[in-house]
Image 1 (cartoon, rainbow, N blue to C red):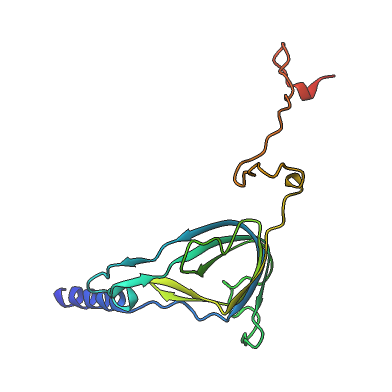
Image 2 (cartoon, helix red, strand yellow; image 1 turned 120 degrees about the vertical axis):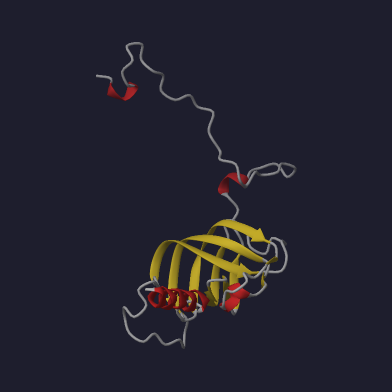
Length: 185
């Protein structure tokens, strides 16, 4: 009985100690409209003693933008080979409603802005249980279009980007009998 327990414990330790790298993925071309953008400064995380892979050592995650794109198109980059259809079920290609990417960038300098349309060329992710690292070859940007409501603003007014504009129009008033205003005969 004791030897069975020792064998099971040894197998568990081997499973814990082996790295679990991400499955390889081809480079992608991702195009979309920036709905959410957040810049994150460089961080360093301590390794976990006894773990293999990048989790076993100190690791640095570069400064980056976390970007959520809407109205996206995701395609395999030109020249990349994909073995066969369905061989990578986690890889979603084609038209996407939303798609999140991490784009390394050294400073919070407004390089990417909400409302801007971008195309990321050569995007790739790799990593293991210790973290995920991303790379890309280039980003093509189209400056954010000015909202039509801002075209007639006075030059000294400052538009509010993150506020939800709510018109000052009263909604339907509740009826005295408590029924819905929408159900009036």
